[in-house]
Image (tube, rainbow, N blue to C red):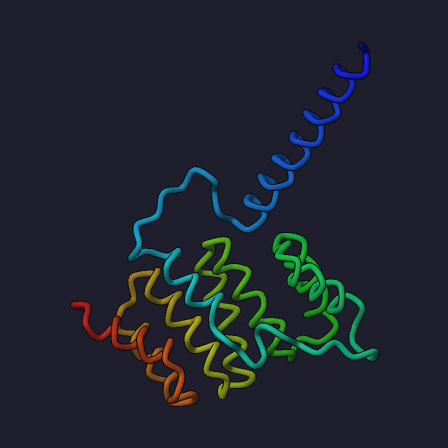
Length: 182
């Protein structure tokens, strides 16, 4: 008879652990669980960013000679543990301040946290180091749009299209920005 209460307690503990873990990851990703989002706002655009194929911002090959802090940051980024990954990327910048991929990753982390001023700064630095990556211009366009700088958003979207003219998501985003009044 004592086995049933023990089973119930174990099941409740497991349920609590699952719910707590989910709440932690929602908080870590910067997305409050109770937030209601209109389809035309940031969440829809974030899904565009997360869903796109990127040559350098989704997959960075980690080589054996890579800085350990960058390896740790990449591992955490892939697990979507952005708060911890941010700390490791900032350490990696100290070792390699001219690594444009680190700044690009930080930009994506800040976009997920809705910290658009830091995202803009990080993405602009990545573009300054390596201006030919379309995805960074696309992400910067999104940031400008969120900050209310519609003209800058359109200019960045056009640059993304210039570097990757066949990308349908970039074209759709640029067309959407063109259709809005300034």
